[in-house]
Length: 216
View (cartoon, helix red, strand yellow):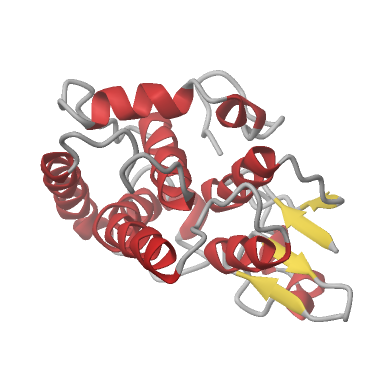
């Protein structure tokens, strides 16, 4: 297998997952800032033009960070980062989807339409007028999530899962692109500090990250 990696939040979720599992995969860096992921060689592997992507031993390519983590979990189930029972796995997926649909997609698109506009306006449809509203919605949904987390160490109770990885990486990214969340939130403030203290958080930060730059 070969991981097509990049300085970007979604690839970082996979790197953090791998660090938690103590797994090492060969990787190749894709320069998304230069648009390498939108050029023919990469598109031949992943027509969606997104990172990360995982080249499988059978010649197929698996894309989308969550799908890649789900696949690796099937192959390397211990330590479990999704769950060991149908109920545990369903709860992990429930919280990951809540986070992605309500919070991180809004952060992502707001970045495309505002701080990242110069980078993306020639690559994808953009709507700069939508950015303030998306940022407001993301912050509202962060507070909504905070209200549900009383008494929990992690999103899925006492289990650290890919839901925590997903939210942590995107909130860390958001902080670096002018979308910080309220660190005084009673649940998410301490939760963020707990996750940031895990060895995988520092280990997953791309070596190309620079002080004051995009964290991914």
